[in-house]
Image (cartoon, rainbow, N blue to C red; front, side):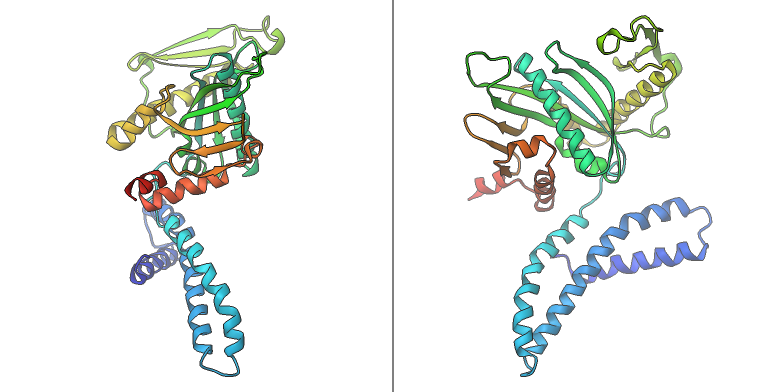
Length: 354
């Protein structure tokens, strides 16, 4: 466990920042001090809960020497000791180094991979899964760009997710998701295996990326809505091409002004991600791999036939409640991935050492 002295230092730093911000004596440092204070606040809350538990344990153990209190202490001690592993686990999570982008909104991109029409249908299932997960956490989920197949599947979808700690929780979802089931398109009852790729990027802020207007080509196109309702209105859809990188983004809402803003936001996010990749070789390697639609980069397997199982291939966390997962119950997988970051290795790696 983290040395008690280090926990005390964190609390002392937090209390110093709290006093500093309350005094008003911080000149031009307010933004930096406020940011550090906000980051330490949840950590200090966990430290204080942990210290309270240790104090309660020490008090109960001391009560064992008192004949009048021994029976009560013997009842309390097992319950208090049972709380300790979970409390220590939460402490480790709270003390994990934070990604600079953890507090940002996220851009999710989902595309079908191997599997033809069935892959497109599975990509649609993943979209609904993340929508429902966002709803369960009170996050705002907005589709920025979507192209559908004739069968109602997804050719490509880009969505923006906003809320507290969005990118911190969703960033480990990047990779290949594989499904095994009898597709709706299969008349013979045969089981197919297909895949879809998920990429999660932090939404860029205006201060992060400077874009030269001369590097852009902005085209307007005729927008087509569901059922062709908007085909004959205006040329409102916007496509932006960034010449230096070759990145192309589009948006097809009804308002051309809104489409321009949406497309620019998506472009900045992609450019921001490229900058992150250049700065950090490990992150760069992970993001290079995540876009592959092959089988070598799988992070999760969804088996719906002949049995029911969803399994994370990094942490080995699994559940037979496949419908629950597709309905957005992802917290177990998120917790297992965070725990893997704490230990520094996957369960598969640990098993390989045995």
